[in-house]
Amino acid sequence: MKSKEIAPGAVLFNRALTPEHFLLALSLTPSFARPVPGQFVMIRPEGVGPQLLSRPFSLYGYRGRRDGSRIELLYRTIGAGTRQLAALKAGESVEILGPLGRGFTLGPDVDEVILLAGGMGVAPLTFFAERLGRTKAPPRVVCYFGARIRDELIGLDRLSPLCSELHIATEDGSCGERGVITDLFAARMRRHDPRRAAIYACGPNPMLQTLSRILAGTSLRCQVSVEERMACGIGACLCCATAVAMPGRQVSYRRVCCDGPVFNLRDLIWDMTPDHSDSRGCTSP
Ligand SMILES: Cc1cc2nc3c(=O)[nH]c(=O)nc-3n(C[C@H](O)[C@H](O)[C@H](O)COP(=O)(O)OP(=O)(O)OC[C@H]3O[C@@H](n4cnc5c(N)ncnc54)[C@H](O)[C@@H]3O)c2cc1C
Ligand code: FES
Image (cartoon, rainbow, N blue to C red; front, side, top):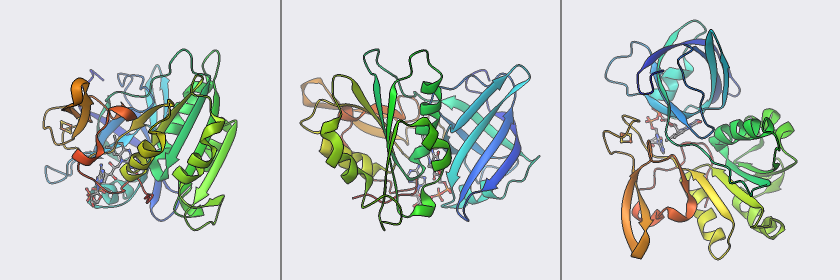
C-alpha cells in the first residue's frame, strides 16, 4: 500500500472465539507493506458511509506473498464499530489503512524479552514474539498474561509455544494466580536482570499506569503500546494526543497514531492524559 492509502481487503474468515472475541483474517493486495509488530491498521466494513469511522486494531499476524498478503486481527466487541466488524462474513470487504504508527524495537543488548499482556493487549505481543522467534539469535521470551477470567485469556494457545516461560493471572483465580497481572509481575520482577532484559507491555491504560509505578526506581527498560481514541490514524486530527515528558520538566504532546502507539513507558505522563478506560478487555487497578 502506498503507505497512507485506504485499500480494500477481503474477509477470509471472522471466527468467534467467544461470544465477544473474534479472530479476523483478511486478504490484502501485495502493496500492503510488511508491518513491524506493534503497528496497527484502521479498518471498517466497506460501504458503511461516513457515520462510522474506521477503528484501530493492532496486527496479530501477517504473511506476505507475491500475490498478496494476509493479516490477522484479534478483537473484542465493545461498541458500534466492533459489532459491525463481528457481523462480517467470509468474502465480504473492508476498507483498511495501514500499517500505521511505530512498532516495538529490540535493543542489541537485549537477550531476555519480557512480555506483559492484559486482555486483548496480547495481540501485538504475540505477533512480536512470533517475529522474534524468526530472528538469527532469538532472545528468551518470558510472558506475563492476565485477564479477568479464564475464558478471556484469548490467544493463549498461539502465545504459549512462543514463550520460554509463561505466567498467568486471572482476577477471579480461574486460571493461574488470582489477581492482576501487574501484581504477579511485581512479585517476580527482581528475577529479571535490567542489563539484559527489556519489557514490552500492552493492555488497558490503567494497567500500564500501574506498571509505571512498579518500575519507578528500577532501571528495567519498558516499551508500551498505548491506547487512545482515534479518528484519522495518520496524524491529521490530533484527537489522540498524549502527554510526554521533555528535558527540563517540560511537557509536550505526541500523537499516539503516528508518534506511537509504542512509547518508552518513562516518557509518558499519565495524569495529564485522559483515561480512556479498558477497551482492550481487562480491568486493572
Ligand atoms: C493502536 C490501537 C490498537 C488496538 N488494538 C486492538 C486490538 O488488537 N484488539 C482489540 O480488541 N482492540 C484494540 N484496540 C481498541 C479498539 O480500537 C477499540 O476497542 C475500538 O475502537 C472500539 O470501537 P467500537 O466502535 O466498538 O466502540 P465505541 O462505541 O467507539 O466505544 C465503546 C466504549 O469503548 C471506549 N473506547 C473505544 N475505543 C477506545 C480506545 N481506542 N481506547 C480506549 N477506549 C476506547 C469508549 O470510550 C466507549 O466507552 C486498539 C486501539 C488502539 C488505539
Ligand atoms: S487519530 Fe488523528 S491525529 Fe491521531
